[in-house]
Image: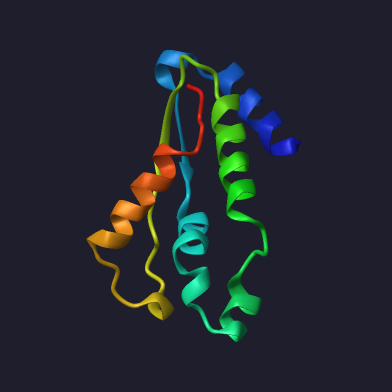
Length: 106
């Protein structure tokens, strides 16, 4: 997978102590939290069709690929999607619960 090859190239070029990698997990969080609340048209337009477990597994896989001595961050957000309306702390708590259960091994 070219994406993981690029992570390897970056990790080889920059010393671990000087490198931090962050995944932006915005679209996945929108998918998790809102797919069941969307109209059918919105689900077809914006839904990936990928089961949540596969999204979680993919995020864990690319996270585990980052070398252990490189700092890793997950930016959990919903972005500024006008269609979603205001999001409250209940949705933010949902993001954190999902992230804790992803199975990232590092």
